Length: 394
Image 1 (cartoon, one colour):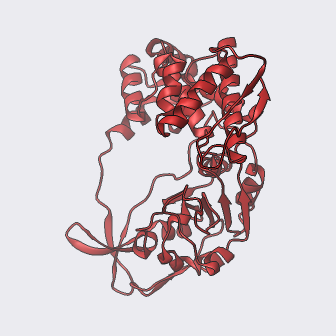
Image 2 (cartoon, rainbow, N blue to C red):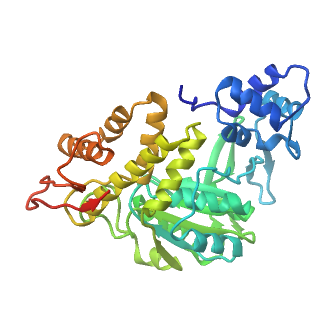
Image 3 (spheres, rainbow, N blue to C red):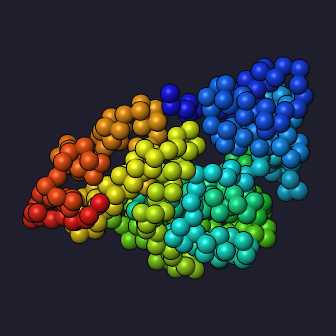
């Protein structure tokens, strides 16, 4: 049976403490035993309990239970010198968890070097959807033990959402810092995700992008950046809009805003060898290894590579992303049926494209015999395009 996929940290703590009733501490061997009994990936569960390590290969169950039993306390309201009340609430550690399935590629080393340096050096990362732009930044911070504050930008995002504003808490109107100010005060990395969806209201970050902090007009205070603070933006475009309409909703960003980013990294999909490692890591985390998994990974990577090359040649309007390949792997782990996994994960495309993609995978995987050892993707799905495709020996 496929490994179970979803379990929260609270559920892990409750189940493990019940299983080892009377124990105040368990070892990694004990944890492996629980994982085997309950059919969970050891790597995943170990990651869930990482905050409760009490030593090498040991986990403190008492600490875990105390955290689980802690109730929420309303934030404290404190007056400032200027007489304006502000809300202060200690946030949890904002260092992201390390993902055991992550494989570095592309610009990862350069991005990590910038974050490691703690030099204020805003960077812009652009590339097609699902190629690991955001995930790569998060994993760089995880490996460097750096905090990150992620803001998912939309057309509705305004200064109040970013900088902060007055909120009604405990019956009183108080000032609450927004994610930008939180990142400034913590010396964290501020990640502006999908920044090209923003309106001109994003211009409130101009002084911030110069490394000068930000002036809070509503409280008449200035917040200076703590050492290590930096800004990273990710987007599917370069802030010039989407001419082909593929990324609908993206906007043309102000040139003065874009000019304040020191460098722009163009992120491509990983090469086939790297992408195969990503899939194998995901299969392993789900509890699946072996020759059949190795072949399945090869098939999926080859399938995606043919489609992408056809996409770059203008023969098709859709592409299989790395994220979608991982979703196919997870779907296969759930249902143990690759045909169903590919079908469900390509249903988002129009009927003609989805049909051709599925037939191509059948050829790549050997489920359908081809005339020779050359597999060709022939598509006539766009006006003016006929018999466009990519030929590749698999």
